[in-house]
Image 1 (cartoon, rainbow, N blue to C red):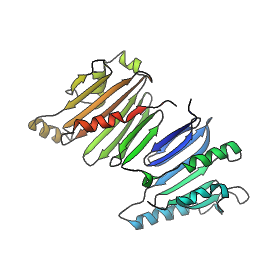
Image 2 (image 1 turned 135 degrees about the vertical axis):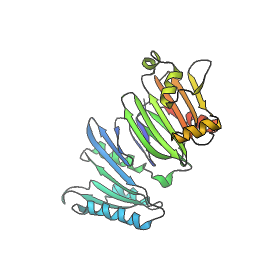
Image 3 (image 1 turned 30 degrees about the vertical axis):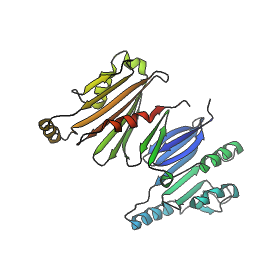
Image 4 (image 1 turned 120 degrees about the vertical axis):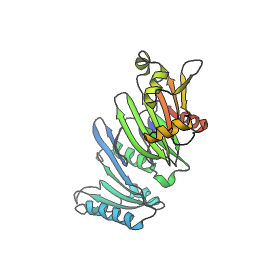
Length: 288
């Protein structure tokens, strides 16, 4: 049984204890809890490359938010933060330790703030320090971005930007965009219950929302691939209806975790099968 796991969300990455529960507060907002009690909250704002004035405005708004707090000296055990960030610490009361940090990345100028809870417990304090030591922001990423929330992880080219997400009962759906290419990743559970009512082909067709998707099922029945390559006339008709003509999709049954993992790509141009295959290969369930 693992005691720590990596979390990745929209450019932010850190290692946390498996006993912590991760909640998505927004596109740039993570909340960590243990036994329904808050432990750590992180928010961030990526720097605006083409507008330093806008970046400064964001920073000023952040400073204004903490104008009622008391600035604190960075404790020795937290000095590791200064290796990556310009850091200012705050506290709600003068006679209590700091509980809020405002950071600006030395490299990419990402603006990040974190809020701490339960520092009174030595064990929790050490886990917080360990987790924040592992914190990396977008400039630390290579040409790929690591996504890992709940029980899955996904490695995507960094050219894909987060578009939308939905964490529903039994269905997690996260959408991305790269130029005119749309990507939807889906996780469904429990697989056995869903497969007792529908086939893999039917489930994939519903996820892609395309009735005429051409399907191919693997010999063992655990993987189904689909695609749509319409004629010129159909392309014009679909674009008139504001739909992406070209589609590639893949779904697989992970029997060990009782999950279904699906990838759906849509574009106005033909989609190489290698793209769908590569993304699917890097989309998996992790044991936590």
